[in-house]
Picture 1: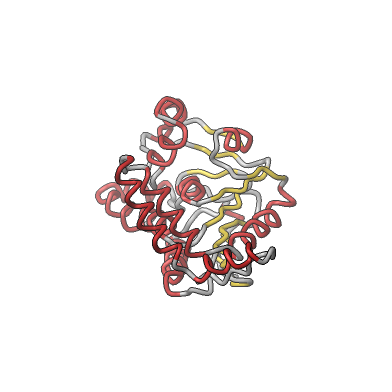
Picture 2: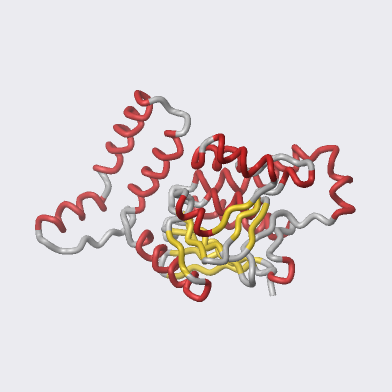
Length: 259
């Protein structure tokens, strides 16, 4: 069976990391398949939400690199990061549809980055996020410094990253990183319910909201105001907007098509 599974149902692409014996550490093949699946979604208007989840007792412990291989990679590790996890993170954040991460058990390295790069994170009570690069003399990568500093501020990020610390599912929820906390046995159902809600929503508008949020990290107020006006121009002229107005006038639930 493949180490990375995928299926499409009800306009939702579900990607399952399926290497539980290695705590779903990402092999090169898994990473390339993930990149291919994410890349294809810009050409598949039928997919309106994505769920990334994992089999076994952990979400993803990062890249699958054996100790004897790590030293051999030092010469061009920057290029490998750019060609690997950085591409995954850029694709996830630039996709015009919502991405949900269903996180259970331990995650580290690229696993934490994938969770943080999602638009909404559902976590099980046993989830633990390890920010442990400093323990091996390495630094944050995969967008970790950007996501954590933006969400937690520099002081809390420094507290985690400089000490090689970790944070729990409860802390992820308290700090605003997680959308919902649930038990392990209901994690996938909760993620699916959220995905169904988003996949039946006004897809173009959701993608534009996602664009506004990510741009706000580097924009000043004036630039954000201009971008919002541009995005609103697009949103107001979608079929879904017209459907929502008609539904409100006729006191019914709108039936969005994603157009």
